[in-house]
Amino acid sequence: MKRIITISREFGSGGRELGRRLSELLQVAYYDKEIVTEIARRTSLSEEYVHQIIEQRPLMSFPISIGRSFYPMPDPLMEQNQAIYREQHQLIRELADKSDCVIVGRCGDYILRDLNPFRIFVYADMDAKIARCRERGKEDPPLTDKELKQQIKKMDKGRAKYYEFYTGQKWGDRLNYDICINTSSRSIKELASVLVRLIDGSPD
Amino acid sequence: MKRIITISREFGSGGRELGRRLSELLQVAYYDKEIVTEIARRTSLSEEYVHQIIEQRPLMSFPISIGRSFYPMPDPLMEQNQAIYREQHQLIRELADKSDCVIVGRCGDYILRDLNPFRIFVYADMDAKIARCRERGKEDPPLTDKELKQQIKKMDKGRAKYYEFYTGQKWGDRLNYDICINTSSRSIKELASVLVRLIDGSPD
Image 1 (tube, chains in turn purple, brown):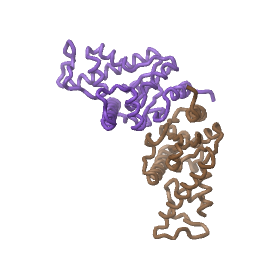
Image 2 (cartoon, rainbow over the protein chains, first blue to last red):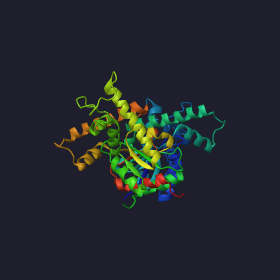
Image 3 (cartoon, chains in turn cyan, orange):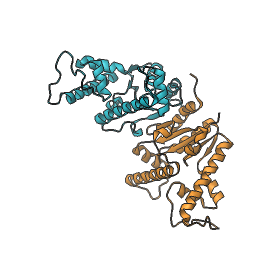
Image 4 (spheres, rainbow over the protein chains, first blue to last red):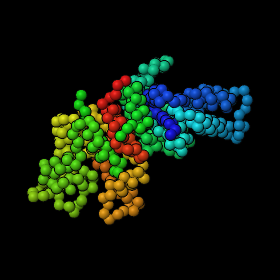
């Protein structure tokens, strides 16, 4: 049986790390930023721009095409967003057809629903998400807790909007997932080793 | 460290079976209907009545006291509901203080929050819940799928109202739980054996 694992995650909840660890334990492919890179290649758009669109934060002032004009339609920005989604949809199907894999974000659970993926939603308390973001230590300049909280909320709002727009489903609604896991006071490494048993099925 | 596991569950999702199996695997006490029996004993109310109150379905026509009048207050029914909750609250604290245990329903996650319980929410797709209810085979007379669906929804609405009234929290909101698990196409036995590892912590 095909093993496709999709991970939806709140920003700062450790969903990406969980995905990476699961792919290592299951010895299957892992797709995350690779998807952005490939869509950018296929659409001739910059990776940064594709990433912005996928997180539903279109930067209006950002160059919308590189090197050539793209889908000259009445509403080029909207059309371009749709084009990116179409590419993403097709790419994710191709990747899942090719081999077992872990796919982080990008509506993978919905796009691959007919393949019966194991659908994980990863979340955490706000304090834990703030702490995790700080651990990553990529803020420059440093943000206050309040600013970081606002940023986390904004990111999640963007993900929710994007997901709901393309799937017609509510992001984070438990019925869209096989398991929702709170990472607040847990080691992601430990979680991964337990979830693998759930994915593979453990002996009765 | 104390091992307290609380299980909240949608009607027909297999939460009770999961709780029972976890208590067997962890070799800890299991409290479910025992709580109703003990509250009934303490309050001199009938078990059936206590059960109705806890599921937020007070039967107005049901005898509200047995043998003696109970809390003669201006609003005796409301007062009685509160009294049942107080007894439940105290009983659950006593049980958790006494030994490690699994507690199904009854706001256990909230009442024992300072003991840092492992909080599980069990849910399933409607079709799976209908199928599980049929397997239990306790309907008399037999219900149509539509009637069963209505009953399941009504039960869950009652549980949600009860929980929200006494805890001020939203029943089923993922942030109130450590894990939310969809039992739709899973063996509860298998789930229990995996969750035990998560509760006990598995080696890194």
